[in-house]
Length: 357
Image 1 (cartoon, rainbow, N blue to C red):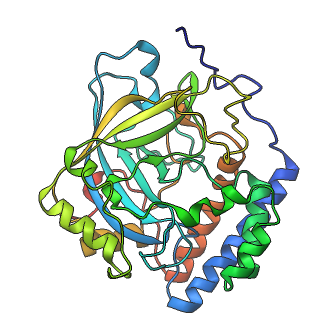
Image 2 (image 1 turned 60 degrees about the horizontal axis):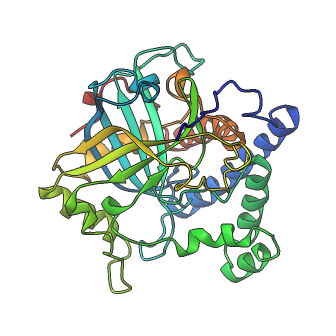
């Protein structure tokens, strides 16, 4: 079967950008600051606007697979066999330090070093890095800038009363999508598939991407579920530390091409792209060797000084769609507020050696 991939610069790919959406994004920036302030008032420490709880930070390598079809070699992945150092953070997605026994999406932030080429950054800095973000849910209930604003408004108003919040969400026609985060599988982090949720440019084309756990040791943990008797403050961190003491984690870095805009929307990430009809293809291998996954110096440096942002990377991997346009403003504002409240300077990390062991 011949597959036809839609180019990233096809005028149908993106729509909705402009002054109206920009105004909504400013509203969301303010909402996130409100959420961050509430967390600061509780803990007397400022965190990011989302993915607050660090579960582990590890180092490894990403290697581009050889022998692929030519269209798969794009951007960072343009050269078969190329190998890049990486740093990777496991996290819980929520805006506060929740109990690990509570089912919620988990995330991975991946910083790749040695990314040469034109960058998206407009601040004149080129640390030669490419940032990727992943989530254990294949779709994002926040959808687009306007949906994001509306949902965050409900969470800010009713977040202290889960029953009230659920009642308000049930009034929406996308309740099933909104509630999916509350029934996410609560399993060992190294066994979870991780998704980009939103689309990015992939050289000439458009993709979503995912990390697929591949080692037998990881796959054996697919059914290791957090129990009520586990230690809620640290169980996911503890499991990661135990795993990485003696085990290597391996992942396939995969891409899913845009072929049909009617079935694979860019502007509403509540819609999951059909993985059977539009299959993921492996373009690189990620390997994380045994190590201490919660080294205090490393965790402190990452949280206090490092920044991971989908808009920090190659032009050939430009984030696409409304939720990514929102991230561009929100991430910058959120990071600036956090550094100010913690009296910490952001460090432009250009070498993996800057991240402590």
